[in-house]
Amino acid sequence: MATDDSRQDEPPGCELALSDTALESVTDRSLETQVEIFSTLGNETRYRILLLLSLADEPVCGCEIEPYVDVGQSSISQSLSRLRKAGLVSRTKDGRWRYYEPTEKGKKVIALSETETDKMAAVSD
Image 1 (cartoon, rainbow, N blue to C red):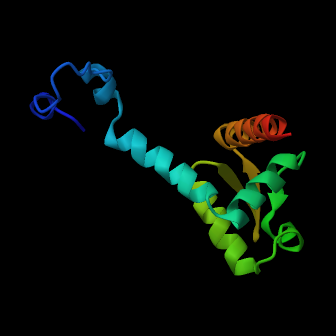
Image 2 (image 1 turned 30 degrees about the horizontal axis):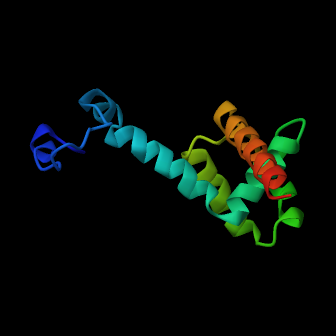
């Protein structure tokens, strides 16, 4: 993060667009959370699982996901754990079964992604 000392090296006549207030609002913690979300969704299997969960009308058992992704149950389990850690899905337990559904954050990420993808497709047509 830039400090007043680093701003002294700016070329003469260069107007600074980033204020100290703006720079202070970009905390390491908020960046860490955001990077975790994008890193999690940067994997096709995890993104596909989140999409599948967002299409379901009710929580989905982890065992139901395997036919729809091209990986084994172990990878699905790891992907679901990573999605949970990023706060994109929640899990409920019923005996030995685990049911997953997108959190509000997960739903918003999917909605935003689909909206922006549709906009980009329209521009390229």
